[in-house]
Length: 322
Image 1 (cartoon, rainbow, N blue to C red):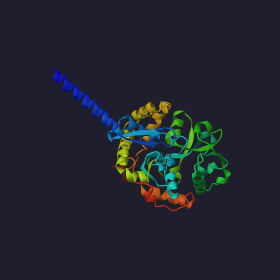
Image 2 (cartoon, rainbow, N blue to C red):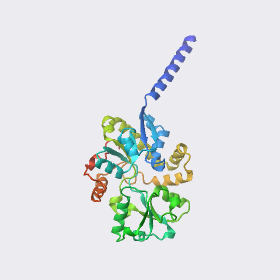
Image 3 (cartoon, helix red, strand yellow):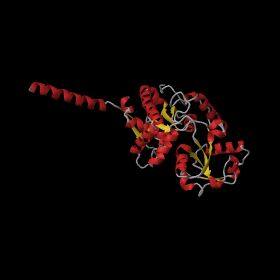
Image 4 (cartoon, helix red, strand yellow):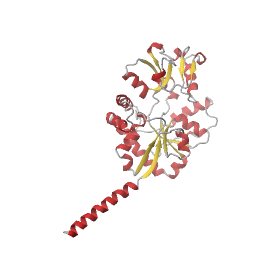
């Protein structure tokens, strides 16, 4: 009997040691968000919560950028992956910074210009004589000027108000119209019963249907850690597929990790984004060369980038398995 008990005890001890070893063997990596946590990031939190990263042998730390910007943090190797934008990657590449977009978080640009109904802004022509709340993006005013010129409108007749970052505290007060992401501010406005006019950017010019946001890494890291990149994206893809299939449950997971967010607003946003994460793409995360080329060419024409670049090096689907 003592021998049996001893044998069982040894087996249990071996099992516990084995479990501890497998946990410690997880490869530690980090992903840095582009901003404070929101529904664009839900797939990452789902992958963490439901063990998708752990199943791939990864222990992923989700970081907020703090005082630095994500692109610099990833480019310098202080974070292995990050959340950024097609525009930023193109600009970085033109400056010799080898960032690479490895997946599109959302298939289409879900941003546009929004105003209160009472402002009577139903078309781009109506921007004339109004105050525009700018978030100070490098290409922002060039895009505004482009869509206004196409509408035979004069951007010089728009008063630019710099440093506008929160739609709800400034619209109708500091500015008459602003650039918002409908998947967040738009659905929240609808939930609050706030009547707005919204003009989607992709409807004004197809070139502006670019990828925003995207997951990024650095060229050097990807070359040295291709297997890790595949594992990271495999888990992230499962996380976003869960968001598409179970938006309400995915919203609960995001709230669990970021309790300061409003639960009803997160639920509303996830229901909207469930149809946008993948849209008509063959699978989540897939990126098209044509989308990258058209926006890069536009940025070059507008002198927003100073050097030509090989756009096929700015993004890849290589690490994203079907």
